Image (tube, rainbow, N blue to C red; front, side, top):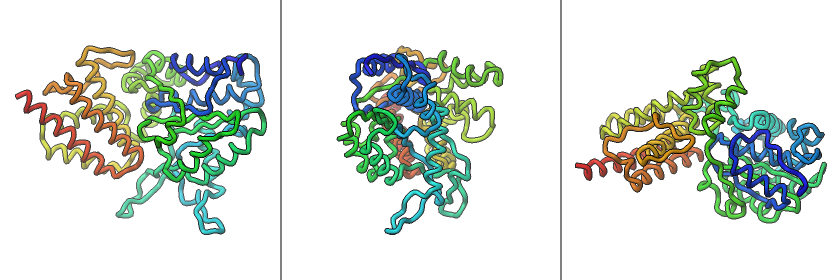
Length: 409
């Protein structure tokens, strides 16, 4: 490994990450477990895939070569020494009952896992999406709703543990990519913990998360943390042009870049939503929803805020709620940077929230709202009670704004 260097194919931007991981790889000093932290769609899974392919590649001095048998197996999701785990919305047909009366994954469940992982490998930056037939549930009244809570079944983790302990089959190393580790339930996390603590030699694990505070401390403490920043606008634009070419106009790309919040994944979602006219709202629509909602909070009109909250909760779609809160966090941060005169390569000076009471000039009060919004987003990603989550968030926001108004008066 010391004689080879990484040829990054999937990871966009993230120069600091490239430098850190590249040096560890070429010097042969990679640790056994890393936790990649950063916003959704900024390249955590892409980096993990590049690293995994490089570790398993049998090509020349610059790896991965994408030509050897090992690389081709990874790209087709049939390499015996690469194990990829990620949350998926399993349906009833994906589960069965074993001879001991325990619920386990069925053959269709394992096939669903294989197909989903293959899709993720093909488009590392794009979050997996599923049609209604993949995520159909019913609410309390019997009405069908188009989401299913993604999970990581414990028997998947047990199979993973067995394969890691067994050791590599085709080469000298085993590699694990564990995407969105924060969504894993305690039972699955505990099953994975011993393997994480005492992995066999030549085992490398890359865990990713958008919410590091939600990862169990027992898991986080056993990993070295690598933080990913936002992707610069020009590089997002270049990737969109590469992906869509003449199929879209310049304004569509400009809008996707502007509303992407520094995330290539979000920009790709925006483009697909614009092209298909289906799915969740575009980022531009979400941004306007957040601004209108924020304006209601600033007005102090509790009745209007309550009505707006009811409409939001009735969406019954975790993806919509997550996108709303993600953009709210982004706009809060953006407005604070604007007010304090700071700038960064992904700062949008024209995309800010109203600030009638000057709250964004006060770091402590901005921090209160940011923390509340961050906790709400974490709870939504863990599929908590959306109504309670949003009520708690709005109470914090309104109370903080009201205190500021009293002080200003």
